[in-house]
Image (cartoon, rainbow, N blue to C red; front, side, top):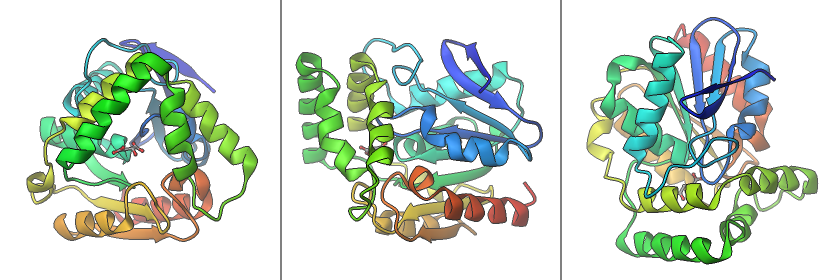
Length: 261
Ligand code: MLT
């Protein structure tokens, strides 16, 4: 797979056509998008960065706000001279996509929100994230791998090879990247008011069995964004695009066709 190194973000950039930009969740890497990169590189330009501190991209010190991640994505797209893109964000990548929509709506021609939500952390959730960040500082990224890996796939999914891959993606995260993102997520603003201002075609996708971001959050997103389409993928947990790539890719492809993207 071809990769380039731009503003220190390791990035897949393949194919030609309307750019599809895939932003991974926490604490993952661009690797989770392999099934989408393989499926769409013949019809679209597919771009999938490792966010700073994840996969093969270097971390930056301190908390990384969702706005800072969005600015990194924007700088990357400027350097790659993509023009407006279809932005696909999973979970934390969805928070980044919403921050991107706020920062530079002119860079968007479509939005795909996967297993994500617009609301901020409740106060107790933010406190618990900050406590986790402290633990990661002393005990490493294993702390989040152990707590999150069992919730990434549907409870009934016993595919041990798939689970090993998920753990490997997580293990490629750096402690500084994980701490920065935890602190950044804890302070992310409420994006609910922004939803009514989104005017580009939007697709919302959730795994029916998502244990980390309940599917009801996707229903709320789809109801709040004018003209948005909601797809609920059966037998899928939080990492829906990786766990059920065929129905996920079919939903994305049909929506892209309908939206002429
Ligand atoms: C993610 O998958 O990116 C995280 O579950 C998001 C979060 O913890 O809010």
